[in-house]
Amino acid sequence: MPSVTLASVVRAEWIKFRTVRSTGAGYAVTFALTIGIGALIAAAIRGHWQTMDPLAKLAFDPVSTSLGGILFAQFAVGVIGILFITSEYATGSIRTTLAATPRRIQVAAAKLIVLLSATIVVAEIVVVVAFLIGQRIFAGVVPTASMASAPVLRSVLLGGVYLALLGAFGFGIGLILRHQSAAISVFTSLLLVVPIVVFVLPQSWQDSITRYEPSALGRAMMSTTSPPQLFAAWPATTVLATYVIVTLASGALLLVHRDA
Image 1 (spheres, rainbow, N blue to C red):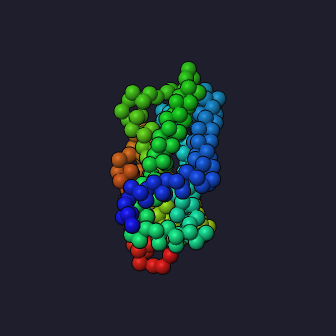
Image 2: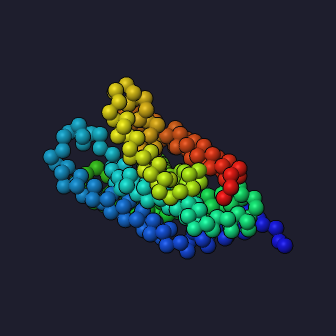
Image 3: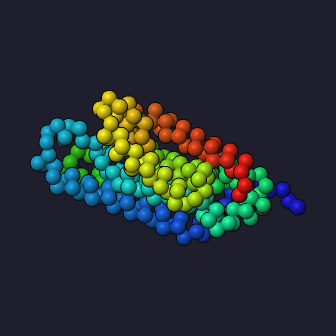
């Protein structure tokens, strides 16, 4: 019997990933939200630019504004990552997968490779398109930005990295919890509910906690400057990557030591 290699497991997981209907639907939603909402925000800014407060104009960032749709698309990529692992638990096919590949870490690694590879490609394409459309809408009325500038290029590319990391984060949560609804609830709460809870805390607490929220890390990654009270772009990326690594490591440990 031929040995099971990581490459062969990756090929098998790629077939699963691309043939599942939810994958295509999830990426389609990612495209629609990132580009569509980004364009709507850009059009709204253009329409109200002449009447905007001068201080707001000085603080305006054409890059992060044109990528505003990412803050909605982040839920789509998280769900893609969650469903990639939890759907097998829901159908019971995870038992077949683990029987065919006794080294469970190999299964998790192969799924992660497939998920990250597909998501980073899709994410980088969609953020570049959203950025270019946003700058085209701004042109002639609102200040624009060019990817010829290093900070702008960094912010655009890190927008794609942010989406890819959130996909892996969702995958890690799904690996830990194994249930679709529970994993989606936790993921959504971390991105949406936690900031609301923090908002009602004393201001000094908000200043200390907000910068560690995943959505705040995303804003910092996509900003050409360091936003007040938030990390700079690269430290923010490091913090978010740490969340992902810890979540994935916890999920992998549980995968190895508990029953399917």
